[in-house]
Length: 259
Image (cartoon, rainbow, N blue to C red; front, side, top):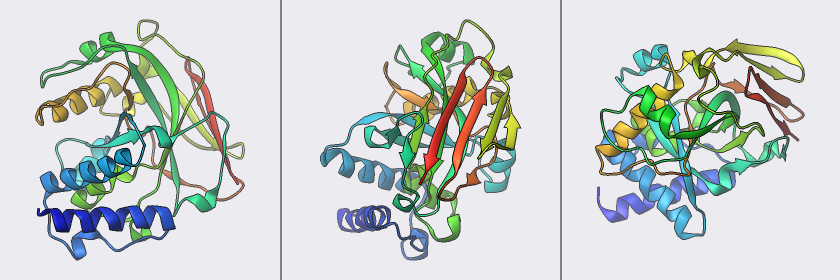
């Protein structure tokens, strides 16, 4: 993809996010494959970092086997997490600062060691992880009606927007994170339940797959990175006034408010 076309796409995505206006699918006016889609993602995130933002980790998407079958893919997709995306536990966020936000409960891995290679196991991931943390991810596709092709969502940084981390740091040696029960409530009403095993059978498997995808590009996960392993249940739309709470066994709770 030539630099002029790439710059045009990056400006389109950046404007959509800043103006909070959904756009038609990029693929409706530009032709690009998955590899080029990751190139668009990289260019957009580099644009933000050049403006003063900072890379702090990654997020995984399409980690449900059912969703992978629906999208006809054999592995998840990933996006990048920037410092500006991290909100405080219990923070009040303006609903108007998003286009059409949805929330997902997730487990976050806080890495204490680098992870590099295509043959990493769940054990390798857990040994490299300092702590596990409860998380809520707020996704906000830049596309109309929250609908997209696989290449489009990759280019859109996997619908990344904001995320919130809980306050309780849990060692990976204490329990098997895959069995931690989770309840997601909005305004006190139970909306979804599940366990992190919903993420590819074990959320550490999702992190290992991320490391594999990065290794193919000559990149690695680094000590200090935050990794959101993927949504435990479906993403749920939120409205102004909603209080979102995710409660995990062992990991405790995390909360965000929309005003």
